[in-house]
Length: 274
Image (tube, rainbow, N blue to C red; front, side, top):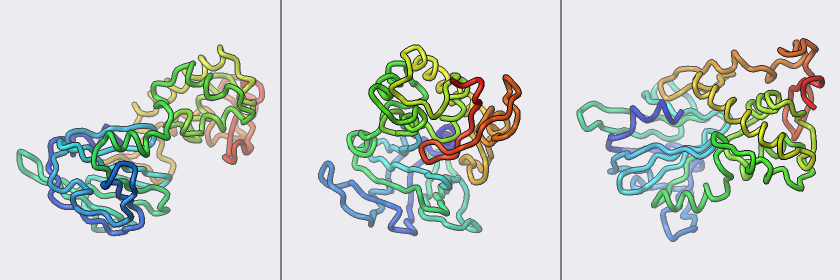
């Protein structure tokens, strides 16, 4: 999503913003660490600013202007950021209108049917990092064995529950937890404190590989997800275990198990994952 937004937004000036659903937004534009409330002003929504960059930590994005203001967007399960007009789209919560330096305009639309996502506005990207992003662990795309080992150390939770904890690693969801654990040969229900340092290293490598491969193929589109241009991802076509419960394991050809781990539907191979 971040990569698809960059060509549309960077260098463009935010001419106007319309918050259509106030309760999906929070403003942290006042004193450091102080919640201003749900109502968000045009200035908080970056009006008048020129987009300098689009940052990401885990599953959250930040649109940052040259004067330092930042809007954080979390898509949740069904959220979309589309560079298109809002007409004809349902569940539209916020619309930005931008003007390019060389002429022409861009409309950025945030929609979220189930409203698990949201928008958070900050006076500076530093305030965002200290606030909302301060509660997140390191980004999973750069996962290290040390970070995984630290997360599972002393934990009696299932290793999959540890991976889904955004305070341990930011950016691992249900799909990629299953895929990485399969690639690393580790059963999702194993207790975290029983993961060896060598397994932690292997799992970190699997996380990086699985996420990089998914990004290269545009992400996984199961139902709602599309990028800023409305293009669906194709990573779901190469899932080894997610959504394949009962089907043959790609390694040993035995049926994959399906159950619930950490409150989430989980698929694994009882033979290949220890």
